[in-house]
Structure formats: structure tokens, C-alpha cells
Amino acid sequence: MGAEVLEPGEAAADDVVLSWDGQDVLAVRLPQLSDSLDHILAALQRRHGMPLADLDRKAKQEVVRVLEARGAFSVRHGVETVAGALGVSRFTVYNYLNRENASKNA
Image 1 (cartoon, rainbow, N blue to C red):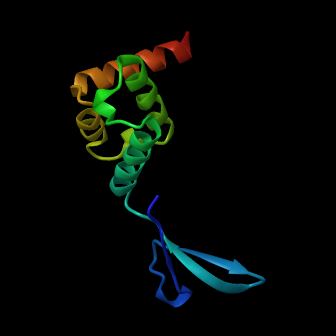
Image 2 (cartoon, rainbow, N blue to C red):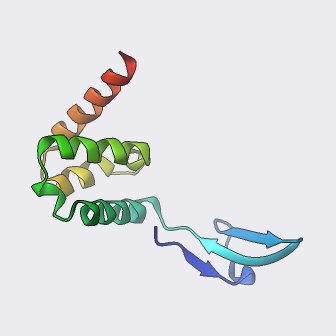
């Protein structure tokens, strides 16, 4: 996901410091959520072996389900980013999300 490993003394307030037996061993700097979305989209594209825009509708719906489970749509401009990667409109992404949520509530 693009995290960076640091020495504990280099850790900032937002970094995660890992300790072992009471000693700080290393720090991990997590990427910004928007960077993570790019990494997730790239991984999904590698998994499918083709650009996400070339997938059929059913596969695109599955990609949206995976992205929703990973919190992609809590990122600012997440829907727009995903729509661009899938080659569909924002409206289509919202329809995929609504369809998924409706099937969960049924």
C-alpha cells in the first residue's frame, strides 16, 4: 500500500511506532488515503490483467464492491477517481453502489 519504514526517532505524530519488549523498534508512515486508492486501483488492474475500463459491467461492479469494502469512497474525490479508472460516469458508480447496498438490505 506504499507505507514507508522509518527509524523510531524520525516518526511524526501521524506515524505508527512499533515496539518490542518496551523498546521502539521502527516506525511506519502510512500513505495518504488518496495515494492508497491509486495503489488499490493499480493492484486491481494487475489482478484482472487489463485496464479496468476494459472490464465488462459485471466485473466493474465487482471492482466497485471491493473498493467500497476497502473504504475507497471515503476518500475525497474517490467516486470521480474510480469512475475515471473504470471508464464510466460518476452516476454509474453511484448506481453500482446503490445496487450493492440494496442487495445487502434485502
